[in-house]
Image (spheres, rainbow, N blue to C red):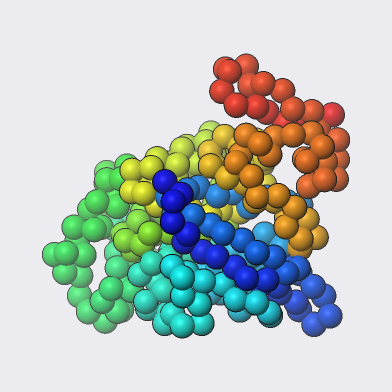
Length: 260
């Protein structure tokens, strides 16, 4: 795990008019790891994720996917390697779970060709991996928040890419469903050797489920550490601009940050 570079950036930055949202940074994201992007609101997390997802183009610098500039990837080819889930998931009226998951096959055959036996095999696998086969005939809009998030993740899995980019995948969920979805993402990464990069707000959830944490503040890269190493009071204060205490988790697994 983590032996090969997936994404590599060279002094990428992003500005909107005179406002510098993302300051020049170099970054390397390795294959097979789960990365958490953390930082206060407006720190540039979602902007960075959207640049990785080809939803935004960096104002300056270059970013490589598998050693090749993103500018040289067609939309279809890129979508066969990287799957992106935005923060604001669209409503999908009159779609069953299986129909939604089948949309993940579009990069492989386009929107106008019927679903093949091969496609159905990937769809079945995605439903099984996300444990929602039993609800495949239900309408997506009738699902609970946690069930709906699993359905969208299944669509990404059916896309058969090597990387998932997720923008705040648990922000609208209660704590029980947050843990459930994060556990699923971690398991999928390990089982499928998936690289995952996701924007998160809760540092403790990031530390628990991510292999590495990348921290931004006011558009500047503050830290890129193994999750355990980021749980340091001084570093957390630099990232979040507040005093935090770090204690050992009562279970003995990892450390927990508390507002001091």
